Length: 208
Image (cartoon, rainbow, N blue to C red):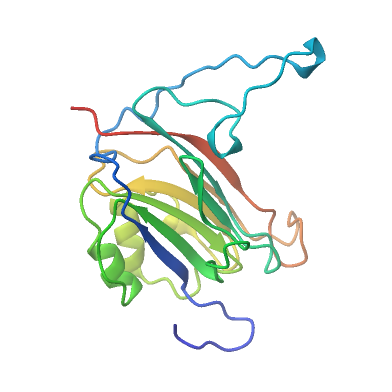
């Protein structure tokens, strides 16, 4: 990892690969579909069901449950959960300042972020969470790779913005799984940082 000066976050916090036996990850776009799931109130005395990753809803067949939480300021690290498996978190001690990226069903050697993103295989899901500052060292080429993965906001990221994103190599349209909040001293929750972002949902498998 490249050393940086005080107050400057590296572009990449950590990247991990999850060679899960998950068949042909999402590369088409039924991603706008919603699937309602009725929860019973605890006031009725009925036990609330637990959903994967602690999500509010269960996912239908052929969809993967996920939850991505950005870092809070430079104190609380991000976390990424996929199919009830915590891939990255402070507890697992595998996160860092900058971009934290998990590839599911990915296979490649990591050198630099550009090489990392360029080498992602078609059908691989890419889960990303910012921590502290992910934008300062991001160049146009890196932004272009994330745009190809379905991001609509990567080109708008600024110093200490918070960003969470789930995309895939081979998507035909933009991913609906993305949140971005600007670093704005008028609205920041923390001194110099916006509030953390949390995103959960169901990402589809490839539809044959």
